[in-house]
Image (tube, rainbow, N blue to C red; front, side):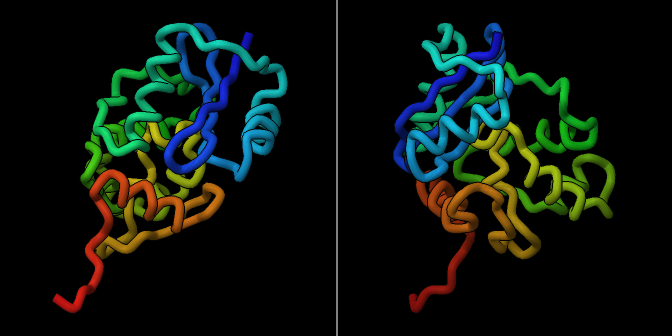
Length: 176
């Protein structure tokens, strides 16, 4: 059985789905609690809203803390990669090594994968990330530290907001 929960964060209502003690998907805010629930149910039609088991609740608590400005380590949260293509899984594993407050570029990840010409494929993988926040695709930038795209509701503004919370916002020109 798949369960899901929605919860308040500093950037809005997020969601998380699980089977047993393993996270099968997460959702960034969709604009309201009802929309976040609808998004999760579209992705997991058999899911039932409920109280997460302790291991999954720890993941929820970590996400809330991270989006509240703390820097918890979310790398130990178990994720179900069974439906994720191999290249994407490898790219997500690299992205999970990026600590809060830091960023890498799509090209950096491509190099770490041993495929230096695959930056665009890395960008596509990040755009299909089923575990946003836990797999911190928001910490992956375009060449030159530019924001790049972001497929979540709110687009690049959501990405920038998350980077500001973490203290990792790409360099901006200033007058000083």
